[in-house]
Length: 496
Image (cartoon, rainbow, N blue to C red; front, side, top):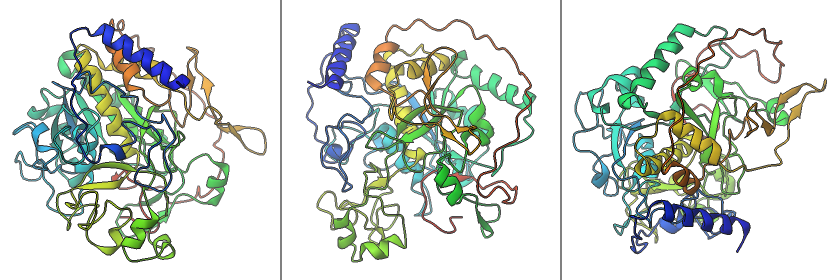
C-alpha cells in the first residue's frame, strides 16, 4: 500500500471505532456516472477529459458513504441561480416548500431561462441522490437541499443569509458567487462588518450557520463591466508572467467576514486550478477541476480543435460531473453543436442520453459545494459543531498540496506573492490554497466527539500603514465595480 493508502486506512479504522453504531451500507455503486466523479474517489481511472487524474487527489471520502455518513439530517441552502427542484437526481433530497423564489415569492425557484443552470449544477455536487441507478451522486448524498435564486435577482444578501423564514433549519449555506471591484477598497466600514458578523454568528441557535463561499476565478483572465456593454480586461501578460493572480479574494468584502469560509479550487493533478483566485482570505481548497474537454467529444460535435480554440480555451484536464437542467435544450449539456465538449454531451451520448448531467462544471463555483458537502458529513457526525469548530477542524485536517509552491519576488527582491509559509500558530498556509485540500475522512473523524472551542477572543481592529502597492499590469483600469458573476471560468471576450 502507498503512504496515502495506509493513512486513509488508519483514518477509516479510527472512524469505525469512534462510531460503533454505524454499520456498513453494503449497497452497490449503481450510479452509472459515479466512476467519472474523480473528486469523490480517485484511483487514477479514466474519466471525462483526456488527461487522467493523479491517484489520490480527491476529497478523501473513501468509505464514509459505506459507513452511512452521507449528510443525513443536514440542510444545505444553495444561494445561487435557482435550482431545478424537480430534477430526477435532486428531487428526493429537496425540502418540500423549503426553497424561496425571490422573484415571484413562491417556493419553486426552478430557472425559467435555459441558460441558468449554475445553481442546479452546484446543488448536484452537494447532494445529488445516490444509489438510485441514474447519474452520479453528491458529496453528501443524503443531505437536504433548499434553493434561493439570489443570482437571478431574487432577494437581497441579507434575506438569503439571515432573514427568510425558510432559513430556520439551514445549517450550511453554499455561495458560489461573488462581486468584485478591480481595486483594493480603501475604506472598510468596521461597524458594518461587525454588524454582519454578529448576525451571522447568531444563526443556528447561536452555533452559527456555516457560510461557504467561492474565492473567484480571476487568476489569469478577468474581465469587468458595470453596464453589460463596456468591458475591460483587468488582467494582462505582465501579471500572468509574474504568477501573482489578476484578482485577490480580499477584494470582495464578505470574503473578509470572520464567519465565512472562502474556498479555492484545486485540479485533478493536485495543484491550483488555472483560474482560482488567490488571497489572504482563502481558508481551504476544494476541487473544481479544469474544463473536461475530450478530443473525441470535439469530433462528435463536428468541429476541429482549431475551431474550438476560438470559442473556449481548450483544457483536457477533468472538470466536475454533476446535475444539469433536464433535457437537451437547456443548460450546459445540449444538442447545440458547440456544446459537444466531451462524450457525455448530447442525446447521442453512450454514457447518458438524457442531457440531465454535465461533465464540464468547474470554477471555484464547483469547489465551494465540495466543501459544503464535506461540512454536511461532519455535521451528521456531530450536529453540535459551531461554525468556528468546523473552520478549525477543516484547517487542521487539510492536506498540504503543491508543496513546492514558491514565493514570487519583484526585481527589487520584494515578496509580491508568498508561497507556503507558517503562521503564528505554526500551521502551514498558502494564499493559493489556504490551509490545504480538505480531507473528508480526517475531518469527520476529528468532528466525532469534538470538544467545542472556547469562547472567541476578539482583539478588535488594529490600524496599519501599508506600503505602496507594487504596480503590475493593467493598474490603470477604470475603478468601477464588476457585476455579480457566476463564478465559473468563462470564455475569452465579453462575458456579461
